[in-house]
Image 1 (cartoon, rainbow, N blue to C red):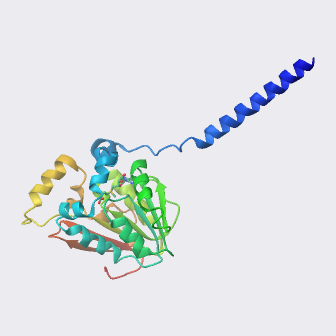
Image 2: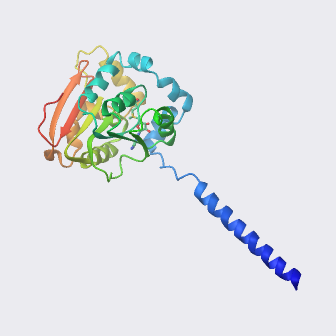
Length: 257
Ligand SMILES: C[S@@+](CC[C@H](N)C(=O)[O-])C[C@H]1O[C@@H](n2cnc3c(N)ncnc32)[C@H](O)[C@@H]1O
């Protein structure tokens, strides 16, 4: 009889131990990753899904060469639209120093949320910046899904050209819906190089081979993707013979900076 009680106690302890282990395993299990969309899997996973290539591309000097010196100009163009202490969201991480320049401009009293759909890219920037810029938050998310927070500025830096048309429309509309009453969305992206641009045909060929959704930005203005385009003032500036554009959609009628 005594033995039986001991057995029951032992069984109960064992049951409790297993329950605790199962709970811990549930809690420690990594959160489900956002599934990568087909356009990333097909065209961009070699870069965004590869740590080594991402590390190579994450070089300010290399980006300057690849953009023929324009990366600095484009970063400055986006920074001019941000005030210190602002609450800013960027959809899509970038290589080089665009994120840190933006975090510096916002400062420690602002807030800088960076959303990316790729777990690897998000971890890359989190490791790089989490101790340097406490104002930065790293969000694993899809810019095509509605965003609940409101921001002073939403940045889409070289993201739109990578997206197929329906995703472009979703991301543009989500960005516009997530600015507050005085807010703005800043788009930095490719545009339509002037006909005499020495690189026009090279870029077109490159796009057709490797970036099939980029040419839509040659044919269509960004405001044509917006459902409520009349709720915003749209301003545009172009750079490097119209190779690049900055478009600002703001709730208030402001000068483009
Ligand atoms: C912002 S783009 C630009 C990268 C560019 N080559 C650069 O550094 O200038 C690339 C990033 O956007 C992310 N991305 C693509 N589609 C996304 C989406 N729907 N939502 C959030 N992030 C996305 C990719 O995972 C990638 O990290």
